[in-house]
Image (cartoon, rainbow, N blue to C red):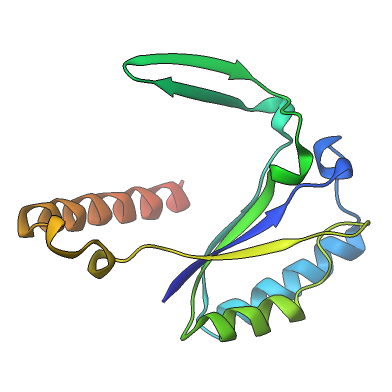
Length: 147
């Protein structure tokens, strides 16, 4: 199963405070363990919401809201995408993670939808489209890493 592991933002991450060398080293070592275990598919830190935008959808209308966004506890400071055997395995890995912030912090684990989760509504045509899109996205990632 794939899970998204979401590092919740804090007042320091939203203020743009960069992690210490110590924390970067600890997180780098943790990421190496994840890769060696064959779990980590992707992972990145995010800039503060002050550098972001939101798009609000209301029917056919779209409106853009510039960051920063008020509710820090609802924001994301970073993420991983992991392939694990179970939610319990993901939980055990998160418990081994260094605290990603200087202050108290939270990490959320959420299962990623798989094709089988959508039932009959996910027709063979939609599955084929999904496979094409994934292959194209994988190719883009490969090319971006070569640059």
